[in-house]
Length: 174
Image (cartoon, rainbow, N blue to C red):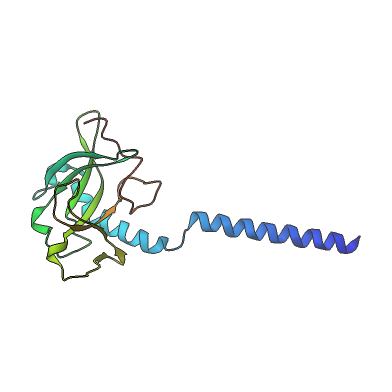
């Protein structure tokens, strides 16, 4: 009986430690420090663009971009002078705004974009260690092949800060 009691205590302790480890994993996924670093850099660099009137050099392109089955991206304000690079985490090529019901625009994220033709063949561009996604042509945007990376620095994305579509962004107010 004494062995059974010790075994029960040991199993209880192991379950508690396992639960603690799982809880820690959920609250701090692998690589969150690196994710937070890029999100932090973007937030610091784009704070001034909370007010779209400060987005000098950027202009709206494509209207509000919605997903075919979920989420949206928002309205991209693109700085065309940056599309050929360089990729600099403090100077994103696009600022992303969500239209609000009162007619205002709310900054929700950024997109780093570089035309594939501006890079050497077989390039794998990245922003602060995050690989950019290749979008071939023809594409829905009417652009030549390019690489892109979204950073949801100003709006939480349940899928993660670097996923294209954000279920917490909507074009309904456009």
